[in-house]
Length: 635
Image 1 (cartoon, rainbow, N blue to C red):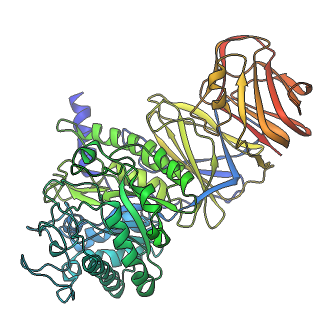
Image 2: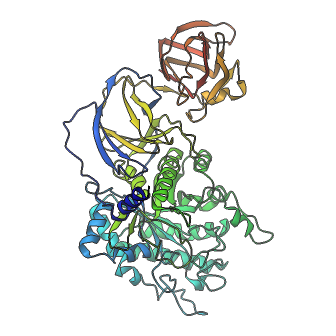
């Protein structure tokens, strides 16, 4: 065991950044290429032997990819070249630095990082002795004319790295976020804590400060695509690093001043609001000044202000809550975008490198790689792109954070788990890709099932990401219409499957919005079968027997020609026999199909039928419960 542990530690310390270049394979409309990362590091973005789509269905748990259903357009995936990251990268020789940048940003030789979120001034991850902004003046002085404004600090390391990154990946997008306005704009005259002074002249000065930054960066060769006005505006007590308490009314005031100026100076730059956690952190609630609203509905309130006309959408972080909050906001404001913009890997004081890698890989895979994208995120962005082996340098803030890559004491650069979770996205899902439908059975809270997300790239190719949450291997199938392939993934592993074109009969899904369901057994949970969420499952909670039924009221008459009964990951819980009946009044029924099933997904073809009510009745017996993760209709 000691020898094994030493071997793993040595492999971690000396791991190459090399991602195998795409190997040439004979083109095939049905061929699927496969890349896998395992939590034991045995495979790291390793390209396996291709597989091929075949005609017909599989008895295995089946991830159904639905190219006819589309969701958000993706902007990119990546991290931040913080001041600390720049410092770490500049400790490398020019040749090693170039190799590392290629492994990060080159879409062919590396993972093609396509989104960077850059601090505007200092954050907790700075290698400087003191925190800074771009317009610092002695205490007690002001600079409303912004005569002292300068980005000279960033000209030394940060901007050269950004320019090289954009050369390596011209599709790279850049977001900018300040951790604090200049201290002279704030109560307390400090970058750490305090608020903006409640003065229209200060709001105007801060807006002009941000515009000058955007203009200076564009002049330096790094146009800014997205801008938020404050990192974590409810973090009132940052741990010795820049931060500012910005209530909704102040953020709205700044954005109202910024919007017109930015639209004129840099029309390409979109303003993002909030830039904080999925839910308000308990510590932020506890630090709310007496008599003030803790604003636990901050993004909702912000998008209801008059500033909303200047706001493209909302940015989220991972340190409180879960990604489902993104969908809640999307449902309330469907015309506003959602970007996920920060999450750092971290570790406990006694965690070993293999434990850190495994824990980070599996949590980030289900929560960020898939959890955020399945909840409308247009980006997935980690925190530092590079740190040293001590988790630094940093000035205050996190001392257990990890980056995409780590500079080891012997001078080598190793890849962290985040390199691979981001890589499984950024290498294969290109900016402009659209997320399309795919069934998914896992949860961000871990239930041991399979999670997935699928994307259609601008060139028409498809990328499907699958994570096996279980510690044991899981076998499954992937189906596109009437074509499918089978695969098995090791426990905890991630796979990206890509294919160009599949000639298949892909029917049009019928919306079940507004539909309701009842059942002869466990009727209270019947709605879980029709909620388009494979991770929620209706089960009979009793052995299968003839006469059990699940009935759906479609809300109005709908036309369909195909029914999918998906039992998901509950192996063996499919109805052994079934009968399908329809009705227009819920009283008079006619049978349209009957038969037996042999696997987790049963697809039933019927003559085109129009009906309001649908009833599935069990006609067989089994010791298993009858489960439905998803009932779908197609026309």
